[in-house]
Amino acid sequence: MSTTLPGRLARLLTGLVLFGVSVALMVRADLGLASWDVLHQGLAERTGLPLGQVVNLVAVAVLLLWIPLRQRPGVGTLANAVVVGFAADAALVVLPPVPSVAGRIGLLVAGILLNGLATALYLGARLGPGPRDGLMTGLAARGLPIGRVRTAIELGVLALGWALGGTVGPGTVLFAVSIGPLAQYLIPKFTVPAQSQPATTGVTSPCPA
Image (cartoon, rainbow, N blue to C red; front, top):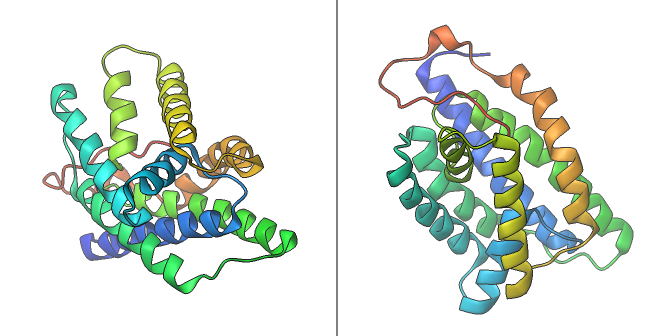
């Protein structure tokens, strides 16, 4: 596992692209999305914008919330706000809708597994968390219990996304119960040792997605 900056950048970009592809797989499965993607899809339905563009616009909006929280973005944070949405849109162009239930279940499982791997890759590069991850850790740094913060954010965006027309279903539940254990298992395997971090990249320690 390369610990050089070019190697970490390659791992970061690979993780972000795969993250976007995982979102597209779950969209095509049409069995329910992760909480933030329910919001993204709902906003896309209301605005007529491509899903990936909404993903990126929401990321930028969330980054603005970092300012009062005094969170410091890293290279990975900024890349996350650009790459994931474009990768999701590109994958949606390539992936056709799947009519069979078995095929959709397969896409859902593949999307969740790929999301776990992608999360481990981009967080493990130690080049900054995603905008949504940083919002959670920033609020927790103010003395709020991180578990409650995470739950409140996830339920809030899920409810808003559902009200806007985003897809909620068994896939939403399966993602919610599986992504934590997946990330916990995979992140240590793809995390760069802390001593190899350069001091100027705005690095933030990995946190579960």
